[in-house]
Length: 372
Length: 258
Ligand SMILES: Nc1ncnc2c1ncn2[C@@H]1O[C@H](COP(=O)(O)OP(=O)(O)OP(=O)(O)O)[C@@H](O)[C@H]1O
Ligand SMILES: [Mg+2]
Image (cartoon, rainbow over all chains, first blue to last red; front, side, top):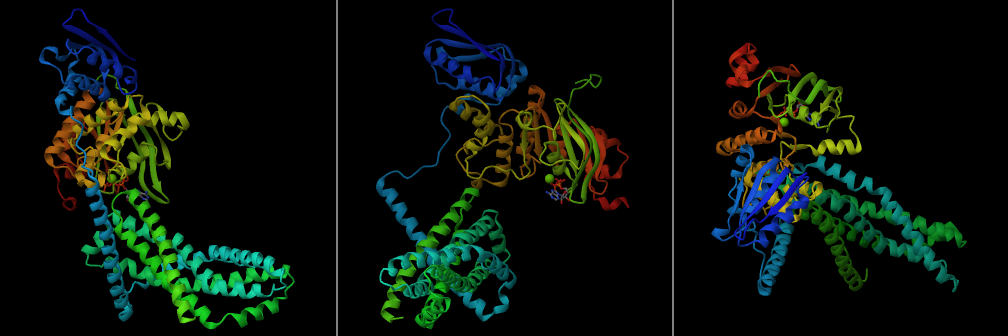
């Protein structure tokens, strides 16, 4: 254990004697005491007597530096005496005066105006990056369609499997749930008017036009948008994206195009699948209300037109582009460090969902005026 | 230390075989490391130096054989015993392994905060002294990703030394450092070993550093899957009759042996 004794033989001098092991494990209790002994005696010259110190590791040396670094008048100086030679050499590695000032920190923006300016600038840069990215992405996709052999189809197929096929169970689960909830809640209300049969119309239209594509897109954002951002973000952090660039391989063509193409191919299929499962869910509920399966089926088929389905699928394609594109963009924007990858994935999901909702609203208006 | 003294064994490796699936990297390796010495692990790239160190510190389980640190079998230590053991080790990984979301100061302070009762200002000072030791004063508040490769390496060394561990493992500390910094660092290692009695196990390719700091070395070889030489590096360079060893120390291409 470390011990400390403080004695003041006269008005001008004092002795701070340290003894025992000065190491990280035992210094905790006496650190504050030693410092206080110094601050309480600003006018005395102080000798730190280390003759009885048996051991002194980095933390012990730090305590001595702490005592030596305080700024004091010349006649009230602090001296370390009696430290064994080896330990003294460890102490001599440092100049205590160097550690007086706190280590330099990066300046953070000061005034309100300055912060406002910075925020505005970073917002603008964000928009600028987005526009650049959309441009680059479109060029790359068009180039890919004109020269299909330049696309890395193997990557695209792997992504399609991960984002599409492997998403079937969760899409089925949510789709079924949607169908059941929709049918059940509306059936209870409509039964009062003896209009249960119209539940079929409601489930059919809502699923094909809105809920199927919307829900699929949100699931895609949570599963694959986040995955794209994390994958590309990790590559960015590890300099792999730079390695691609210096090999002359365009990261957008190499990383973004296969993912966007795969997502665009998969979202409409997933969306159809969700709609069908939703209708199955609705049918199951209708059995409870004693509507025959065939009646339900012919009602759905009569009510849901081809352009309802096409409208829904078109939205799906757009959602697919948005989600995959944002996932890749956030990945490429990743700064550095492990935490940045997490931030990118989060931001990919949040931005993805916000965009889905906004674009869905725009579609609703357009479809209304075009009377689709 | 006189050679006639009975020296305290801190690390004892007994018949260690290291394998991944069915690929054997090291076979039946045995050696001892004594207290307070600087022990070098040498060998070509891919000869299993990092794998050996990872077995010693218990990250990987041996396929056969045993490793003892201060008399305790590493693989058998569980729970508190294992924590107590790890507490005595400092490890610097070959690629640094700094925490990317923390500043340098926070990286070095982390073990101090977790393991000691020191007040916050004390922890900060200890961490600053460690960073000063590796020449990183003034960079305390930067993130690892804002540093050069060699600076990251030095920060990793500082973090490994934060608690003044009884045994310090360094995986290629001097690669990526300029000659002056590397030489300074050698002196630091020597001072620590001599004054605090810290045992240092260092993996290195740097011949100059080996001759300056290592009391003893072992040399691993990829094809032999084990130790091809053991002893004082100066003696090995002068006297070894193994051409592989002489080539290594004299920095000659291996092809000439044939
Ligand atoms: N986690 C692992 N899984 C499978 N094989 C591994 C693993 N880690 C290392 N190896 C293999 O073990 C062998 C030795 O690797 P090791 O990292 O120990 O080399 P090294 O001597 O440290 O080389 P270098 O000087 O290049 O760092 C290599 O052939 C490597 O492929
Ligand atoms: Mg290695």
